[in-house]
Image: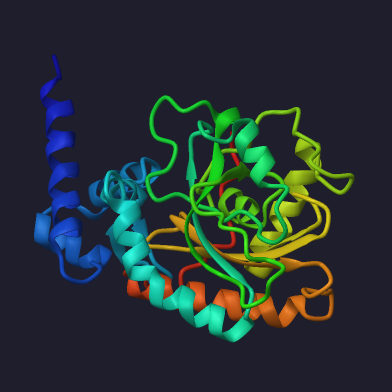
Length: 295
């Protein structure tokens, strides 16, 4: 049974949380203290606890928003279908800009990856997409988490026309798998990593270093790591929090998406993913450079 002091602390924390969740705008520390009638020290202590458990988060101005747990809950169940409907115009726009294959993907459990998935991954032109829209769910084995494509805009070229919708590919060797890992949408997979090609990253240390680069520049690149001849760039999609809930990729044969074209293609991908994030309610200006890579 909870002690009176313990119950009081829970009541006060719940009162603060209700103020944040029900507010139409982010709430400042001063506003929360005044609204709840609490001492500043008590408010500070309780907000820190709520932050630790991802129930609230602060923006760059120090104001409080509902935390990542609320975002993850909101994207469970039918989130995938809703996300596709919202994202489709943005995917179409990126397809118009690049003429290459565009995919939207989320993190999911590994079921369906299997041999059929590996066979499909030998097709010509598309890298996996990343992130979580309520992805793997409780009980999913970290080592089994994959990236599943949930929407696609086809390439205008004959080479690169494979339909990747429904296909699951590994996190460590797909561009958007790297984005998902870098921005907290999935846990680091367990070693050993499957070597899909001679260029595949196969150690945890090397992957952790790569994820740091992804966070620094805001996008990921896969250069013939998922399959020979396949290059892709990917950028994260957010829905209000610091955790990527999905991601967008541009993929093409290495003969078309050459090294000199990658920066401009990645910039277009980032711009479209950012516009989609804004539509999903993600405020600008959040520092997302510290993604989670914890197992």
